[in-house]
Length: 434
Image 1 (cartoon, one colour):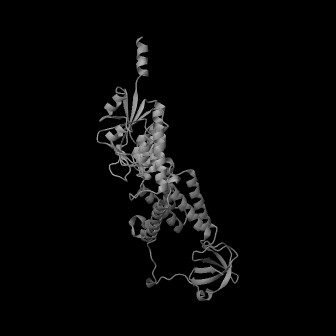
Image 2: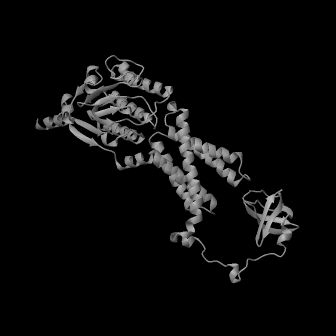
Image 3: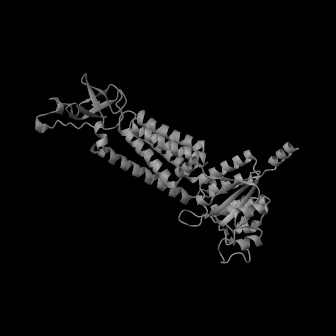
């Protein structure tokens, strides 16, 4: 009997996951990935309830919708504990929960989407967010008109908005009166007693180190830096022979960028494949096609398009203004990286750490040193011949039956093309295609 009682007691033990969103501040894709992981763990552990303690001014709409979907699909009881404020994306997350409990003097609402400067989003974005709020309220059995009024100021709810023409924001008392909130409590223990979970084991869930790194990598400032580093590595790799630190640095930066965005669902394999296609076109232009033309420009354009798509998130929220802003930020990063790469490559020899890579010894003419030269240098200029090999940009040219090492000014010339000497000085013979 004692053993049976012990087993029965263990079977009735209750567990509650407490997820504190307050220290995380703004809702971003990193928080969305964190919430998805928490709900998966809760389902595996068969917990009795998940309490999301919310105090946020909002964040990204696409991240909020990911959290909303995860909460609606959860099997455990989900409780939003609004401790001070659930504004914008915080209101959508709260509405998705089975129960909403607010502390005194808290607020909830003002869900109208805005851009980074605080300007109201387009009609398309507002309509999308309004539909999300309505569908969420329908699912959880709350007043859909009030949910829509939190997004669209044109929806008038008498006695709700203190100021006409503003999206609805509810205080604790208003939320209780309009049955948006279910209860009020000042502490987590008070909340748990309301739902007969006072004796439950509380498991505090926090972001792990990997999720902290993920949030950092998806920060717009960090993503701009990663793209700048990737572009700097590509430029330096093209300007130096063989495979070196520039190419490795570029690959690492691109791996961090796309890897982090894939994890938080900002990017799909389509964007990664699109970038790979663009990179392949660019390499094809540099290696196999003389000059730099449409194929190279197409490659650069496809790469830029894939990067812009990873920054935009949900395609249903794309607007011309957002596309232009992200494109401008990416362009600024790349231009800055190109300028930085040229400046650094010119100044590396001045740093002691790079002295081993640069030949410091000089043989100036003032000390009697002269480079090897041909007496007939001037005679070679304007001489016409044929490229015996591909010039990329160096190779072999044949002039009047004589084989010479030649180089172009950067132009790629295939074999058996007519060429002409434009400069001859010592061992350097510069040619161009006729």
